[in-house]
Image (cartoon, rainbow, N blue to C red; front, side, top):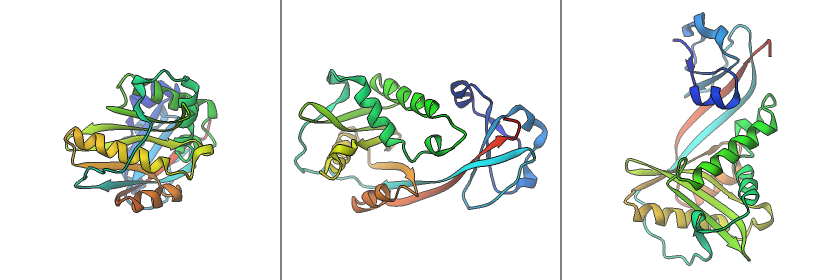
Length: 231
């Protein structure tokens, strides 16, 4: 099996990025490996493969949680608004996006520059404001200050959370609960039946939070970043 070029990642990071799915290193078609500087190896099970001239820099266990048969929640939710309806300082939204992604492989991989991670999440915010990366973008205000945000996108009969974060100074006040409930209610109103949330296994607080709110583990993926040794 040959490594598949990821056009978006390659263009954004300005290097050749590929994806290979599987655990059997003998099945890798090495004919096109020379063209890649970074390969994402993705598998359903934990495995340790070795590709000539590539070295693992980081590995992540990605989890997907799902809540089926969503039901509208009448819990009181205050000061949660559509981001597009607010006149906000963009840097405050960027900071929340960085908080959302602090456990991501793009932040944790030592071969990824922090500037690349931040540029990726700024782009996520910019596009979400224009409904390119999301179908919904909600912001929680505390005294007119963005204290948290959540974005989501529709896909057939379910929605998927993109970003969800609460500013460190406002954590522990139930804001994450408000944002998740508000997102679920919006999703239900749009006719969706289920919500999916991706996160990392080592983000233990997030995993416990989703389970507490009725989400169950749907899928686990093991993702490794393999970098060409010459870099």
